[in-house]
Image (tube, rainbow, N blue to C red):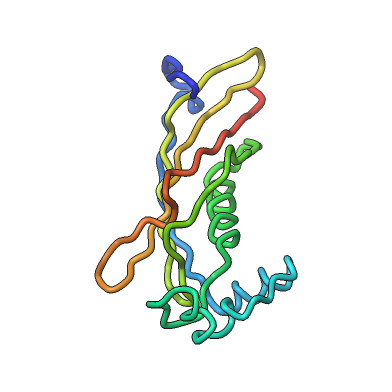
Length: 151
């Protein structure tokens, strides 16, 4: 884990990162991901197949990797300054995001460190889905992401 770096007055790099965004897992988004990856498992296109795996599923289920890919895409959209992104470690799903459900992403900075001409920023991301009046966390633990940029 990186340690917090001291803030430098007037420096945008010293401003802690914290933002949220959401992505709806539409049938078109799920199909595009399947075409890109070759993963046409029936649970992504057929509600009955999804229900065979997830007993409470009322619709096809988005690919877990699609939900994670949207996290990376959302972070890149927030950081348009040439920052590079690297996901650290593995993730384990706790639930699913069904077709037409919206995944909610919360991203916060947990540490920052300068090393020579590079700044490394460690982020923690949590993903949620609202279902049956409950806000469920998608992964068992927050996802760790490391950003780095040339200063």
